Image (cartoon, rainbow, N blue to C red; front, side, top):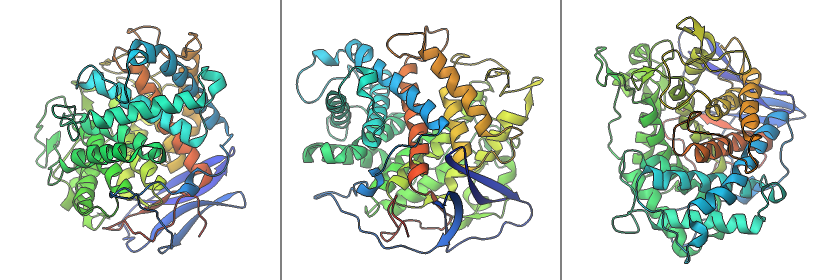
Length: 490
């Protein structure tokens, strides 16, 4: 099944539709596709390489984000304004209550201590660093709303970012890292560092690069795990590897985007594609002759992690929260577009099947997405809590922008306001901008920081879409120093 991108403007925001073509999958090598705004209409354009100049950071392999990316104003469509409001509330909480509770206000010196090297010590701060960096760099940060000046917010974002990099095992003995989930944390912290690159000292830039490199190098030659093998045998009962493969892929997405001429770029890129395709592979895909990035799916895949209907099992249940981890694959759309590079087609693999399962498919008699005020139906219960919505809002927004809601009975534009408004309504209950009133709503300890990170991804998705163009490639090797930077016209 091929998705052809057809685009139009809807309610003032970027809207892409993916249209299904049944039958033999046409090969699309040696071309890239782009969505760009021309006279109020978004067009599909095919093109070759476009000359552009990248300024390399002295003394390392990192290519800073091209400066044209950050020029221009902010989008004002309703979706973006909702997400920006959520992000602003999350910042108000982070820069006041959270900062004090973490004890960062009492610590002196350039590098704060996180009190440990595990998930609950590192991941929350990585999420907050990323969320602050996105807002500060895109102009979304609202000092009046948070009550904290932009200068102080930037200083805290930089302090978090450089401390996360410094405390990583690549830079500090017995530091954090090499954890089953640390690729995810490093991708958030590393992206924060990349966004704030111009404000980091040379030594701290080196720390960021080393952190990203070391986490990425762990996956060279890595064989992605599968929920079931080719024969249909379940390898991990009740435990899909979809989310694990997707978040591990994020560090490789970042590494290949920010260090496109690194000596290990090709090795990183191969594993990245392998992880992205494996994450949401279905049993039917294992026999597919569809070619993507130079190989057929049958060659790429060695098992499956979701069911043929787009659903998946995690924590011994059909668990809607983990459907949304398909957005981890689409992190590539954000970092590659920031780099001025075309997005690998693998980033969107089976996103339509997953979204269709959420919207259309009944589980225990009801669909997961419920039209009644954005209620989520958890057919077999939930591991965390029934009041989580930000991950669904992010998925809805990316479904709109990238068009993988083409087969949903109601599209992302319908669902996003229901889910985003629920988050906003929850935030209105407090004076400091927090989302949750208690653990009963979401028992995950890092729930507030999680909201901030997802809101930042959602905002960055609409922000990039409104000012530049997303380009997609299915070529085997999809880096070129001659591709156009985000925001430049061809």
